[in-house]
Length: 95
Image 1 (cartoon, helix red, strand yellow):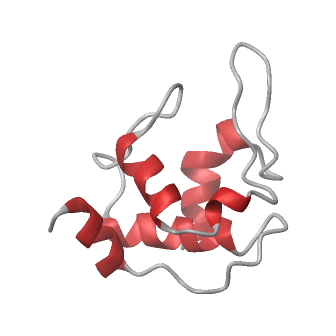
Image 2 (image 1 turned 90 degrees about the horizontal axis):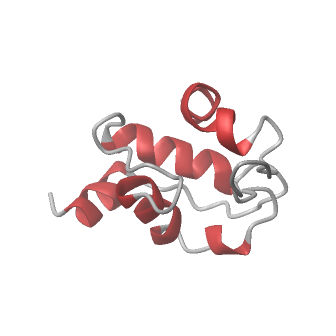
C-alpha cells in the first residue's frame, strides 16, 4: 500500500507526520503541501530526485509510486482526492 511504502521508504526523511525536518539538510514537508495538487510534481520528484532526495525508480515499481503519491496527497492535511494511477506513472516514465 502507499502507507507501507511511505513508512518503509519516505518516513525516515519526511517524518511520520509528513512535516519534514531540518538539521544537516532541509527535508521539505509533505504536510499541507500545495505542490502536491498536481500529481506530476511528486511523481517527478520520486522518479528523478533532487538535492538530498534520491531518484527511486530503481527501488519502486510504477504501482508503488502511484500508491505512495496517492497516499501523501490524501494524508498529512492534504486533500487531493483524485488517485494517481500506475498508467500515469508509466506515462511519465515513457513506458
